Image 1 (tube, rainbow, N blue to C red):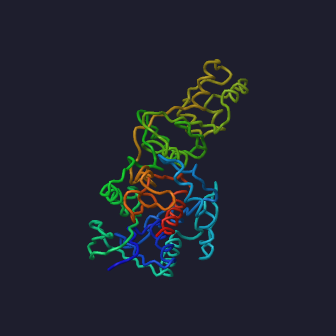
Image 2: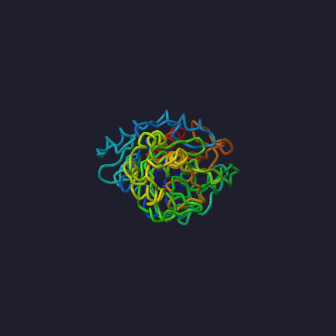
Image 3: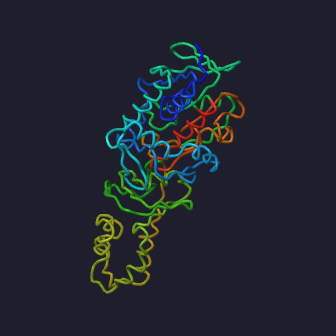
Length: 383
């Protein structure tokens, strides 16, 4: 059996690319090893799928080549995808910071993609495992259901996150098979595990804070866990985290602690009781203790030390919570190997890589889904 293009992976990028290519009259086959397509879409966003963000640009992505994403993001924008969502009459809402979610269910996005593929006469095969790929005059894809030939092969296999719903390293295997470079991978948008001091007694407590590392600042919520920290700010900063560097946390979210404490030196309140008006009481108690002296009795040095801990609390993390807890995979197929316009391999004509399998990782907030749509669209134009 022969197709114009075979797409390996029935996730966001793969389905969208297939539908776009099919709409242009190409005979397209999608191969998905799971029993259903779009499983990661279904579980995303708490079951409501943060399908894009109102404001998307290349600065919202992490890559060895920060400019690679620009072309694709400009050619298919978040507004373009919102129009598709509206066309299918899917109700959505903006949660915060431009994040757009389905009002009812993430399954609606999967159903929309399947409908688009059906209208474009794309064939989708599920429960089918690719055993190996060979290339002669065309690509030969050998599966447990037979061998299929195609002039073009699109690898949309995703990264290593969410292994329990079928994530594998197969996309990286194909890249290595054809001599393409892989940027080292690791879990990202993931909770971090503390090194040394633990805050198990604070598990479940959250604080609005500013989290910083390696010159990057994130103003969002942090959440204490039994092993370390999570919450949107920690997940976001994990894109930039390196165990060799500390993470700084401003518990007052930008309020200058030194001035705040100095201005209230005449109060008879203990430090922890005073701070309970600005941060959760359990956090104030844990950091400064119930035996903390009154503000009015504190020395200038004591005020300065307390201010440093509030605005510049330095923590060391030893690891992430791993791929099972990660939303995405950092690293992947090097963008140096591909055309930023078509996503075709520079070394192997007809071989494309799109979506999360690439060394392009978006921030938390719908950016990774937009990358799936934009990269899939770009490849489909060339297919």
